Image 1 (cartoon, rainbow, N blue to C red):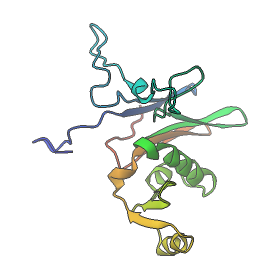
Image 2 (cartoon, rainbow, N blue to C red):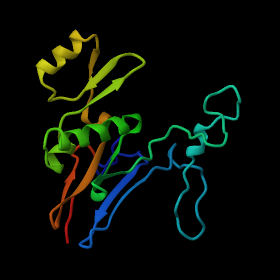
Image 3 (tube, rainbow, N blue to C red):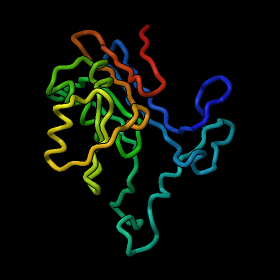
Image 4 (tube, one colour):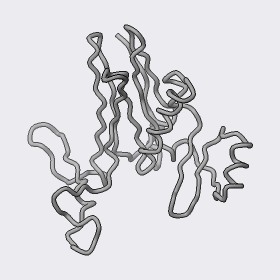
Length: 193
């Protein structure tokens, strides 16, 4: 991506928004037109462009992504919600292509397994495992002893920039309040009113 004269990067088509209110209602919403302008169609009188995620289906009956009942194309429109004992604990999401599902799991693990607060959970150094090549892309900050152990287990390690590993936001219920976190890897922030 090339920066505009303002310093803002051109490109990118995914927007993630998370919000919660005092009544305990919350929303996790991700919008990604796919392939820049999406389908090329715009809802009349709104300026809202429509996505074209269906492009990931195939009409070839020999392909595993062949369009058929009950099948779904691979895509990364996966906003998340956390529940405990049937009660909403929080909402979160990550932008980041095929890294998205792994990033979701890492954020939840950071909070549940390691007791991190939301901001620390989304900012913690992360990794992406490519099963096909047994490659693990590591962000700066992953400790040397962890890298050594991964190598001993046979993984090929590569360095990944923070921008290459997505980024997200999270809001979690803490008693009668909401606590939020916004990832430094993407443009965003938290706000309360």
